[in-house]
Length: 135
Image (cartoon, rainbow, N blue to C red; front, side, top):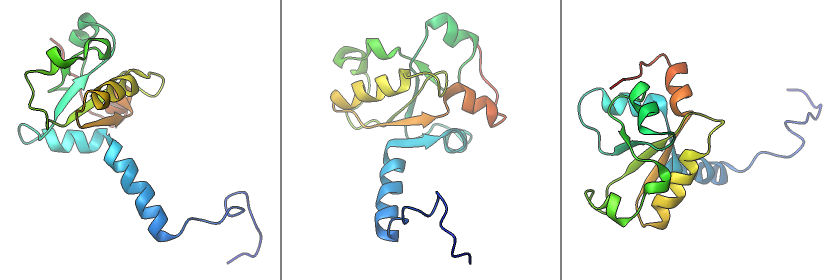
């Protein structure tokens, strides 16, 4: 192993315990397109997948199969009333350039609802080679 210090090793890596805590915390807040796809391919998942940006026409033109459209700005006690309070919501938007999923996740959390963000959004879904559904 080299004794040279690079910009990667200049700041020492966290201890394994700190690293485990950090990455588990990330996984408590985020999931990815592959995991969502795997969870949904064999029937109804244990979460509700929400497409949270754009408008109904954009959703109809292409969305992750099994997703429901609910714009982040419309999330409130009334629009969430059909779902039990312990329902896990997974939110996604267009992709890394869009903050709709972050807005939705923050709103759901403020409303006391469990939530994770599907990182990558619709672009990540397509990058994984998965198809979009259309209405």
